[in-house]
Length: 72
Image 1 (cartoon, rainbow, N blue to C red):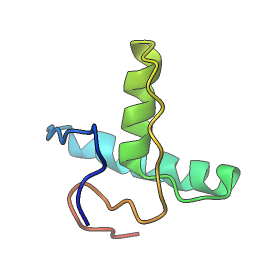
Image 2: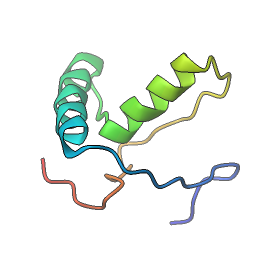
Image 3: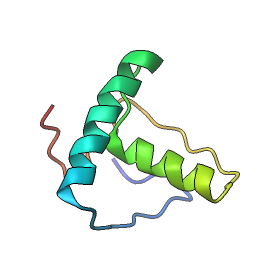
């Protein structure tokens, strides 16, 4: 499956502790929202809110962990 039109991939390094905490928060949000939320979704939301960006990106249940290892 190709990338959605109008999107670009950005690779970043974050501390392992942040990733672990974001994954835990993503699990909590998944239960609260009744759909799968990934740690990458939380990063996107944070960037969007911090910089007040207009674009709302759709997410799907088949979004994969950026590292490709969905070890939940």
